[in-house]
Amino acid sequence: MAIRNIREIGEDILTKKCKEVTEMTDRTRYLIEDMLDTLYEANGVGLAACQVGVLKRIVVIDVTGEDPYVLINPHILETGGEQTGSEGCLSVPGKSGIVTRPNYVKVAALDADMKPFELEGTELLARAICHELDHLDGHLYVEKVEGELTDLKPVPEDEEE
Ligand code: NI
Image 1 (tube, rainbow, N blue to C red):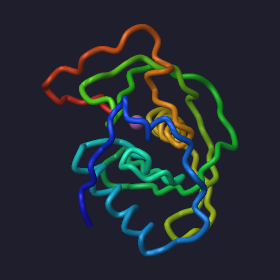
Image 2 (image 1 turned 90 degrees about the vertical axis):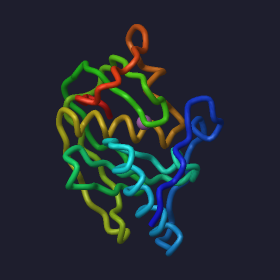
Image 3 (image 1 turned 180 degrees about the vertical axis):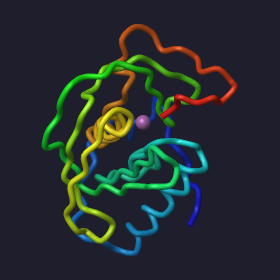
Image 4 (image 1 turned 60 degrees about the vertical axis):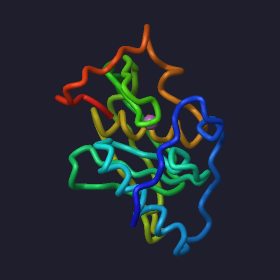
């Protein structure tokens, strides 16, 4: 297990479309472990594989710090409602911005054993799912920000994602 280098806005790889995962290999297993390590090290809520330089449709999300979800080849089945709030990204360090997202999301994905499952989320989890799935298609939240990006305060009393 290892911490991987998080790619930052301006790097080409963050604008590319990630590829479907067709089989679980040791290499992909290590990638997922490293993504979780990297997520926790950075105190993040979610991380997509492209953010550590790998163009695979894999995201890890943990909104509580103790209950990680691994989503492989995720796709949205259903959305509902709307929430407008502050959002950040490990690839856009020190910044946040206001983004409107669905307040409810249901996704289908494969887990780390390539078994299909569905995940429903509201509020922060719904926001994180939408944010991470955008990464898989080469999109950053800054494209959706209402108004300007703001600088995060140095004290981490965090709303950060
Ligand atoms: Ni992000």
